[in-house]
Length: 420
Image (cartoon, rainbow, N blue to C red; front, top):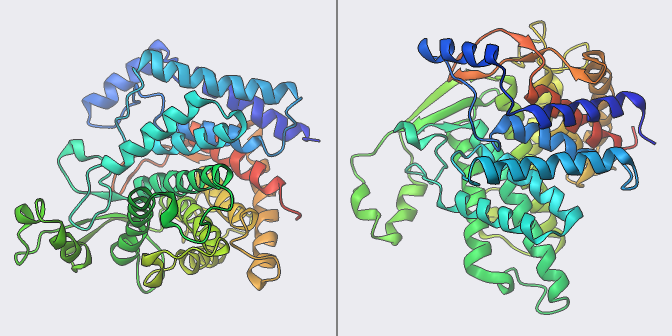
């Protein structure tokens, strides 16, 4: 039975998703002013990450709603209506790597619907990810249209959350179709698909660990960019696959970008890594080996991020906009993202029940729930940090935003499946 506070959260999230592309004249006027002074404005892409966060909240709420519940039906309708809007008003285009968060949500929806139309969208998003431009080391560039090679925690977290769920979805489907046939070898599914997809997934994490992580504290930067090396002929390696290995494994000059420990960046990477670690656990349980896992394992890094997150949890149970600033302003979007990741770690069995970490995470989540609910009024989540314009550009404005609403609902719903 879903309590009234959670029902209010779900109802408000449905309302926000239904109206996210409806822009009032006042909002349009504000966007004109923002654009004139060089600030970011809302996109016309319905799949962009603010919509993706609302969708995440709704698909995660499937875990607490009964299918016979009228609210469940309304949540499904809101999701399908939003997909139709994307296809009819935006021609079903994929423009940004941020759209992969919505892709993860559609996978969760497909698990319930088994609708071939949903599967077609999922496959389309996967192709977009596999074709996405990368930097010298193979990391997905956040916004290549701007002519830079910036790697953002946002894009890495969003894309890897999708990639891990997509790989696992295909493996489960193939298990059902070919039950008992050569089940001990990951190659049997499709070497070109699985090894390529898994390798790209691991590469995103390996590179961010190498270039985007602070070695002393374990905290992450918002992102980084790599410089070219004079001893590598980049034009030549475009037509010589063998030399790609040299470039990917080479140590490049790195410019770390943005704040260390920005809450949402930390949340993005935790979300992606929770999915990656879950996939790694799944592969291990299936007795499958991944070549890259031998030199880099995702589970220990996820555990490290969990430890660090709990170290910086505020007294009120939340996380600040910059997580080291425990007496700074709370950010409910970062709080929801981090809490969702911790809960997913337990729910997917990455954090095992008989471990010391499990008990600590459970206590942490209890406090997080109380905090998130304390910042929610009639289903509306407040005190989320406004959008970020660029590396290090964070306007200290707090209020109700889609990313806070979706993050808190996804966390509350994921935590509801855990015995606290």
